[in-house]
Image (tube, rainbow, N blue to C red; front, top):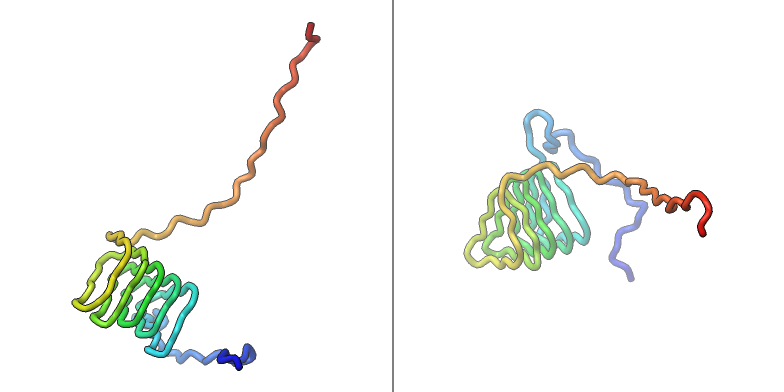
Length: 139
């Protein structure tokens, strides 16, 4: 028996006051202790992870990890790996990093103010010309 939810399930409505960046509020997303993410997640705002993630995380604000993350993490502002948290096999890009006592961290860290990513490369058409044939008669 599958534990997946049916695809026909309607999306949960988002309350107007959820903090989507309007009215000076900052968006905040929480993955609870029983939540599991496999894949990529990009958040415009802050992210708190108490569950498990196998994939990439990126947030324009702060990221706080008290659960388990296996994958690349980019926090435009600050990354905190809490005392019960673990960040394994990860490449981390952050402006500021805090790893609390008892936390597990294994990976490569790049620190500094986040620069906006370069625009995606546009395809370039490459034309390979045929070599010119010699003019005139060969002897």
